[in-house]
Length: 597
Image (cartoon, rainbow, N blue to C red; front, side, top):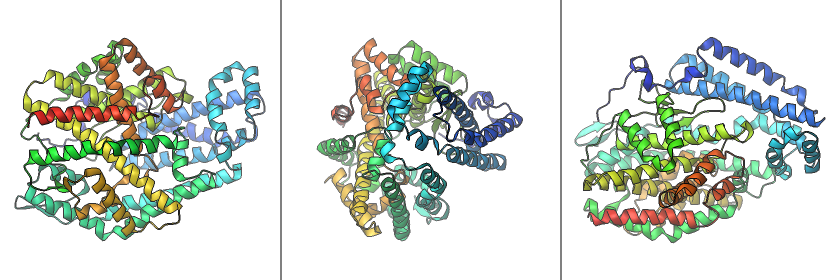
């Protein structure tokens, strides 16, 4: 589908998000910024007095929560306006003010946990009995108490908070090198020279003739090979930063600290890797399918993005995408569909690509605002799935905000990808039910097989690599470019199996993955899709009970630990079952795809 990039002024209002519902103009924004900044400066009045009485504790929680709510509203507004056009100097200035505001807020509140941790659970319980309104904060207080062995003195915590801008130096250096400074040579595609960039690498690997793909692939990774020592240093700096912070806070490892926040046992991480290892033959078989469909004697990693179903001419207007998604979500009940329709009708989405707009897609929102979705919609089926995915996040945000008090309204990343991928799963089932044409069915099957490959298998591979490199550092080993490259190359060969030629260039893929700077983040993509597919199976095979259990998960926020939120809804990620359910679905879709070969 051809798409001409537009100016925002050319868009119909219905295709833009309703941010004016937060602040109608700059005057209102400036007043809110001034008010919040003033109130942040007054936080110090609480220092040393939070636990003076039950009434004082209640007022502290109520006042600071309201302050944070207002700060986050400002954050949603400014960050989204900034992402409408990253080159707009007005919002570049506002964005700098926003970052400064949140740095000051974090520093001003750094005394809170150390001060509360000077007390025992019995002190909190006594206050709750004196002031029943404090009951709502009991889990919050218990969550703070669990950090007692990992919290330093108020002065030490303030020092760490002040130093926090230095902790992501490795990540920022990686970003500046790979996004701003690294240049790729032009590559030849069908006899013409084409600029090679981060953004067009995957599209070129999807669309370029095979005779050109090898050259594009090798050219791309040669650039990372040329900078491998610098990139090893940036990753090493991030690993050291996380490991040192963990040690300072009395955690056994950086992974322990990363998972501790959401009360995720290390066994869940290790079980994911172990279960996926058991089912790697299914991925190997899928690589064999890919080899046969593409008619290749040797399957290489530069063939991984080539479509297995070509010449399927499908484009959808945004209204058509909306209607497909609304129909696909009917198994979740009328209430869910009505809220979803409300979101489409009331401008939750900023739909089309415009000059200077941030690439990709995301869902954002805060307590007291609508959820908002940034899209760059071009009308492809992939774009339709992206809308369904981001609407899943927004529906999660909507329900958590509606049914939880502010202190429990923000759900963890561990459960966030469940709601989004569940929507993609239901859309897949819906399209397979509606479309009988073989080529369209193959296209949808291939799309979802690739989703599972990329999200379950690939992200588990990333998670295993991350676990291994931290283990290397924590036992005193060096994270050299040679070590990282060899470790990654071996792991890649293990995951993709004997059908795939484990090209030498792929050993440098670790150097381009930003997620390795996110501190044990990626495993949650794999657990998330596993839980989502397990939920989809239960909802479609079950009835009202299964639907209501799922809706209960959406409404739970952080009122329970993430594993318990999922378990109460019927999916227990502490067992291998959700991962096994997801891989069984992968196998089922793969077998149907093979039936068309």
